Image (cartoon, rainbow, N blue to C red; front, side, top):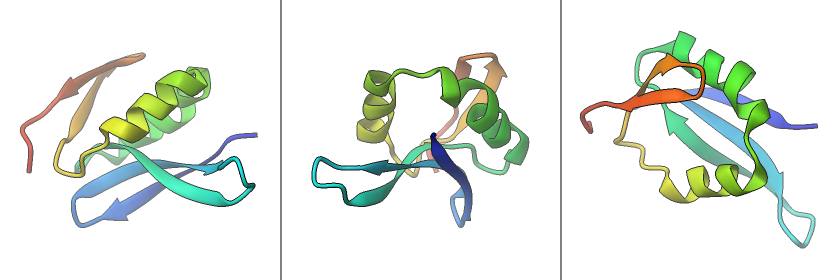
Length: 84
C-alpha cells in the first residue's frame, strides 16, 4: 500500500510519498510541486503516481526542487514551469 499526501506549502501544492528505508525507518519524500494547482496535484497523486515504478519514484525524489513547478498536460505528461 502506497501512502501519499498533498502538502500545502508556501511554494505550492507538493505531492509526497512515505517510504521505509532499509532499516525500517519511515520518511516522507517530496516528489513534485504543482504551485497553486491543487487539481494537478490530486491528479498526479491519484492517477499517475500509482502506476510509477520504484525506479521512477526514486528518480523523482532525487530530482525534487521546491522552486520548480509543474502543470499537468495529460496522463503522465507534465510541463515544467518557470522556477519560483
